[in-house]
Length: 365
Image (spheres, one colour):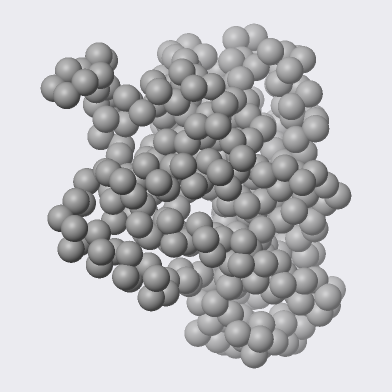
């Protein structure tokens, strides 16, 4: 089977981990500090704090920006559930917006609709889904006009750009995930990015139990630190990130040019965006997705559905009193696209022969 994802771990990462193990310094130390510095330089953005996962990074972003109980945060209904869960963990309430049909990113029109209907909205939490930027001109304009905090979930968008500027640098804060399926990995880990130094200092305390000085704790925090082993892997992966993204874009270009099937809509890279294709997500029309998946399985190609359900229809949300009674009226595009989407392998480990096999299999469907 051709795998849907494959972490690209080389001898450099193995040697870096071995060096950490031999050093005896396994807890957060010099590698973590250097990883934060180099990630900040890569983004050309001020203050980076490494965290134990993309989820904890996103939660720390909200808490460091002062999100509190009673605040409302607009976010997409079409994403991994962690995007909304961190809003709950921070004590706020998620208000779910619909998506744009072309990009599957949060719809600026849907955001505007919510803001015209509701009071008490404090922030917008956007997701650059599958590796492509949201429309940052529109969304930044909305955030400025309504004086809202803007947070970017960049879990799938390492190195992606909007009009030549790296994602993760537009919002008041942003968060990256380094889970093994991402464009770069630390095995498990995350990074939270701030424009404001005070927010970064507060976040650094938050991930270390609220520590002020040795054995002195200013407030109740968490143990959300990144390990030296993970940071050592991350330092190696960051040096390879642009090469990994280039390979993903090359694979996507071959798919764009050669996939030709009446039942399939290919992803579109919109004007202004530089897509890094964490996923290459097709839409299978006419209710034929299950047949497509079965066909690809027979052809020896793994596929995956991201995401077959919207976040608010998950049982853990339906069992709460957090949802608006009529939330679903806004989610027309999300509710249609969730039945159509399926992702195919795009990772940089694919050989040219495997890419050709995938294209042939799709066109044969």
